[in-house]
Length: 106
Image (cartoon, rainbow, N blue to C red; front, side):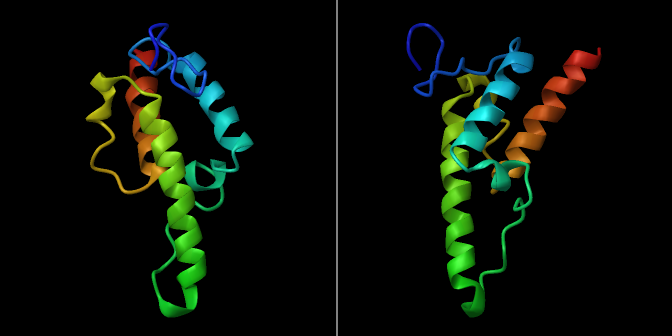
């Protein structure tokens, strides 16, 4: 993060007050980088790690790791604790959505 509050992606870092702006920007970035399917698209669940699925599992794991890195680098330190226990970016995305949509409804 630079001094302007932007991540190295050029997207404002998610904090307690900018989810409505951060979410569509992040979604666009993930789509552009071909990572959306593991975040909230058609490929959110890890395939089984079996010999016949080795290549598919490896590819999913790589895409998930890239998307996880992008998400974690674009949230404030105060929100990082909410993402640490999850293994998939889909879970991280859903957690952030629940966290901030709950606040927006209040």
